[in-house]
Picture 1 (cartoon, rainbow, N blue to C red):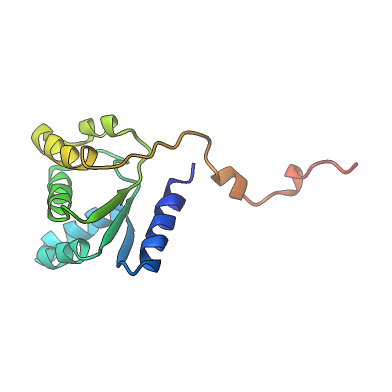
Picture 2 (cartoon, rainbow, N blue to C red):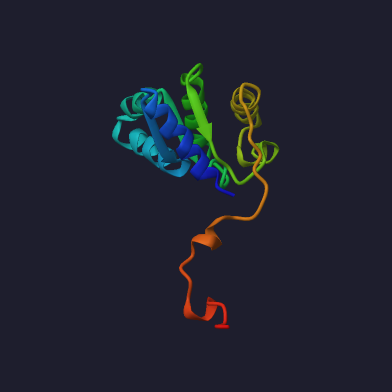
Length: 143
């Protein structure tokens, strides 16, 4: 479907217009913030995620979140109010709620995301099979 490609293209356009952009997988952001809790650098790591003009979180809502992960996402989205955030996901926003252990955090976070966003729904087959290297078996028969 090309969600990541479109998000990266938007980020590239923003860079060409002078914006500071950061692209990362959501799982990496969560791991980075978890590491910040462990080594007491959470505030510094959060500032690094708040700083860019545009933050792109790829593969959002791929799996169930822990309470700490949900809280970290809430803090990140709250702190980025008024700054551009691009999220890609394989799930519809309505399917995100059950991934959060605390319904209050889910409602607050997702309200901020969903009700202040432009949504682009991309339906269709994945483009990845087209990128797969052709094997000799895949070649059409010679005429």
